[in-house]
Length: 112
Image 1 (cartoon, helix red, strand yellow):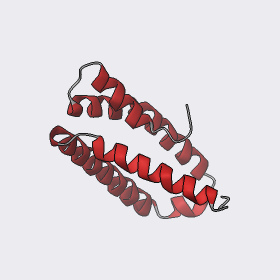
Image 2 (tube, rainbow, N blue to C red):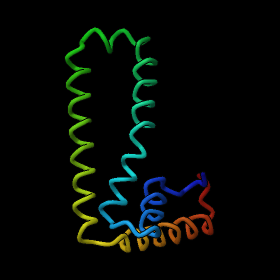
Image 3 (tube, rainbow, N blue to C red):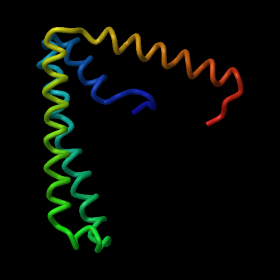
């Protein structure tokens, strides 16, 4: 994978190039991410076992999980609805503007 390339953007673009509708390509992209997200969540939970304070209040953990799950679902639903009516051209313009800003910052001597 190349730095600066979004997995979702690449998989949506690939789906569009294969003839999928924008909403179908987006849904497919998010379905592809599901196993990775589940694996990362499981690893984080296993790593968090060591943090006893996290498990001393299990209701906080459950509420946090439910809220983040619902927020994720809302974001995906919004994006799929948005892409049914709009193209990804705005995102291309954003990426070009961001690249120009980074190049200007580097030319002015900014070092991260």
